Length: 518
Image 1 (tube, rainbow, N blue to C red):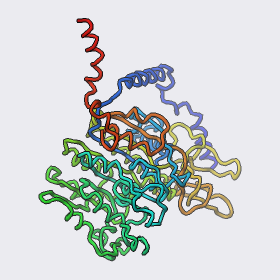
Image 2 (cartoon, one colour; image 1 turned 120 degrees about the vertical axis):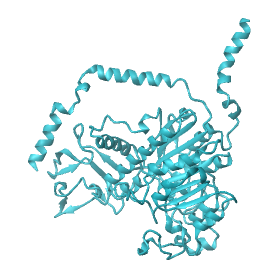
Image 3 (cartoon, rainbow, N blue to C red; image 1 turned 60 degrees about the horizontal axis):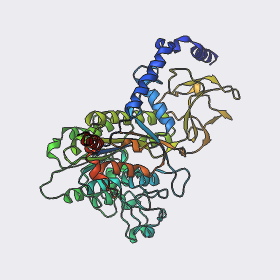
Image 4 (cartoon, rainbow, N blue to C red; image 1 turned 180 degrees about the vertical axis):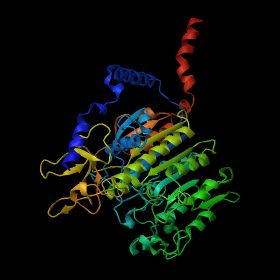
């Protein structure tokens, strides 16, 4: 162990840690001047009407996760990592969003989803309803439903889609279409008797019934669509993957039946079938690739399950067929799950995959008519530090040992979670375990079965028409209002006639001057 620490300390002091070009002050001056020129170009605001809207949501993707994912992305490309750029880093406008729920300082994913999709803050655990609704109380829901930007886009004549790596009935996607006093009411099999007797609908049923003309729905969550104990098509012998519905309904069949005559609706559960579709001949697409959440990207079977990037590619190509544009919600939902399990490697690879999807979407669209926003619902108590040297493996050790218990520690740590381990009355010696393993649970200060969310603000990255509206510290519920304003959807459209003629508006002073001169 002493030898290992000496090597790490030698690396920290080594001049080879510094790339040769970075030793020259002109490198940094030139970089700063280029950044300045780019900033000056932003003075020419893009005030076009946004034909398309894409909201990328990294569930649990706090700022520390963004930074660590950037380093990981660079190191996967055999670079040091710190100097790398995520696709979201290239967005010219950045803001901060305050994530608290109306009844919670540190929020959950349901109340936050209601904020950034429906434009109103709400109580933790509730989706698509106002703060007048109490979690678990079905009888408080009626009359308190709030609609989402997905609904506003649909009402504005746009096509709409949802892509997620979680269940399509999970907290983030459900706020786009459902109204529920409990985020966990995935099917009627998860609902208490009083909620069923009170007339509340489960979230899977609302997916099929509330907005039946959502053009694209891709993710996991098959079992909530089928009768209780119905065998899963992919895992027929595994009881945990069987259907959960008490009403015995087949909601995939109901989804088909809800489509207008003459329209082609396709349901797929296998990557091969998804990628083989002739999208020009498909009007509605439902893809459910796992009984529950989709598998972590590091563990994904790339023959049966599509990646998030592949799903986004299909969704955009489907939605682009509408000349009036589209709204697409893309969730990298399992960043959050990796952190809850203390598995930083899983979480960060999920974040890198989300960033890959952001890059793909950028290549398929134009910032002239597409407003893209990247944000998170909340953060996590995830951190990395320890005075690591430049290029230190993001999942590696800090270059020192504790001056209290004389043991090494990993750069990545959690404030709480399942990684708290005591061996023989002392903190576990991480040199005795494979801390680079995908399922290694990083050490935590407080023992919990599940690591918790963090309460700090999250970043908001924006590019495209009216992206400059996202520019400071905002309440999280401001996000969909700014996006709707840019696209001339929702209730605030008084500016839209003028916004559709930006060139004329700019030329008016010059035309007036020309008239005077003549």
